[in-house]
Image 1 (cartoon, rainbow, N blue to C red):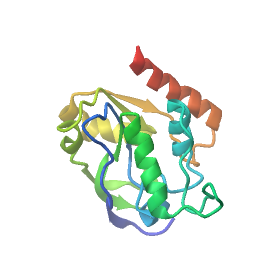
Image 2: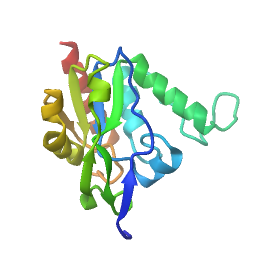
Image 3: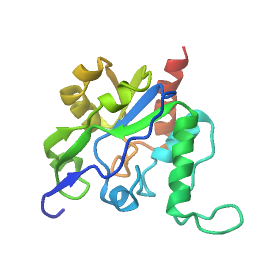
Image 4: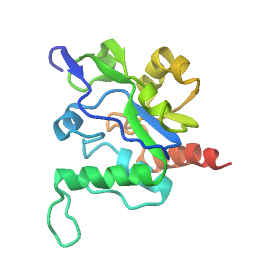
Length: 183
């Protein structure tokens, strides 16, 4: 797993004034940090789950073939993912601004500095917070819930490490949470 490294979140949250749902992870994985955007590990099911929840096509990952056969550039991939989120009122960020961590292991996280969540809740009308996994939920309750006043719905992690949840089960549970907002 390696040695501890001090990691500072390397990219901005995705949101605008129309965002109504805030999805929070813990901290970007090593692959996500290398790709400079959220859920950059192609094995992570986040983008497939979100696309299924909102009835949209799955945005391409870098290297995926785009229509016409050319590989997607990193910039095009990121833009497609941003459009998917913003077009459906979804904000995306992480609970942690910086911490010490071994690789991508949430279990190793220590010395947490929480995100400045006011950046989002002060600009958008967030009505629901969904945490992607138990670690994000635990850290949100500990560091951010008092600052937002919004209890979080903790959803099963889309990480490939969460092998007990199939893609179908993840889509069903996440869709249920999104559907409850429409009621």
